Image (cartoon, rainbow, N blue to C red; front, side, top):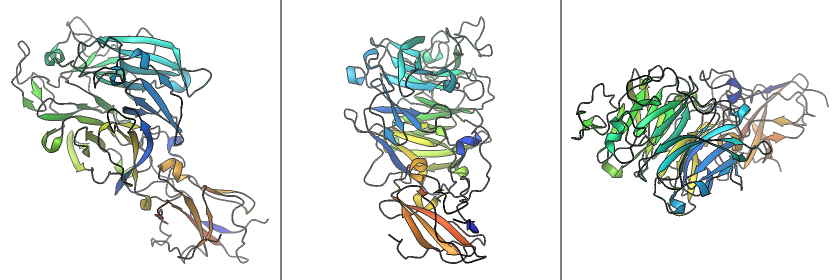
Length: 518
């Protein structure tokens, strides 16, 4: 059929993105307002989940860590039946009679994972006396499976307690080194002992094994402190994260009786900081001493944020800085939670201080009778979108993963930032953004609306489809010399729809209420 003059409203606009978010990562993702937000469930039926992550550049898969020793894969919205890695027979965990804080606790993909296939885990050994940092490789045959025979122990961390393990692993965006969070093993003065790994943040080079010590680590040399130490004075740094744009460091350190704290250091910081535990809890003296170390600790770094245990709060859970594709106005906001109270909050750091502190608990409550009740962690996918991990019941398969997203009416199909939608003729398929895949909202149908002229008038529905495409496109031609304008919206099972956007004059596009043709 002949080509026809058209004006297509579902084209994209060029937009600026975060410096360390690769441009190809955001291709095809339409931007949306972040006010208000919500959460949508992306995975359920999990057993004690406590972390999620994706390899760099892997846009289709989310890896979910289960405490009893398994790593599961969520691929394109489907939870795969086989575990990527299963080390349940190598770790002491709640499922094998271990303590509530033991098990598989951390996961980090090497920055060059796409090439070398290396990933690192943190887990309790079978005796419960040590925590281990271990390197594995993915299978050479199936990328959805790890190679169990590739196991190499990187670091043994003696840990004579079932609790206060820490367990977070992460590679810094700027230096590429592996950072390891280690708890104090419920003995506070370990955190002030430079000859102990306990109560510390460690930093090592794992580009080859055995690991090496980065030459600029702050305690390298004959000072009596372990060379691996990057920072000290931590109680149970359960989760920490780097801002992927600036390498600024955020550490959520679980408190004891009175105060939860979030510590912060600039990406340019040389390390060697002391966060004060057990002499300080938050920014407060505890009355404890460790030998000659008393309050105030010399060069103590106070938290950037602290909160008390009112309202049932008991344990801070970090936490990521949002640098995703979907909501540009949200970039730079750090999200955190409390495990006991299910508080979810956010803030920004400006000039070294907290601004825009917000309680987002009600805003991020999921719909449909679902509840966020025991938040164990946050995580990022490869596009920088933030996920929330909820343990659910401690003893059942009630664990879930949610994604922080804009409410559906704030989204647009192929809105600003998306790939251009420019069909050249009626014999070509028309394709637009698959919001079911990219936003995780439960989309049930897409509707194509059309009007004559430049789109300033009402648009009527001419096609409805469950898929993000129209085979062959519109077969109707405009009048000679004329043009058609189009817009696509997405609808969920409840009938809630995405926005239609605004026309060139800045006014909202008008969609008629007439039903779509069968």
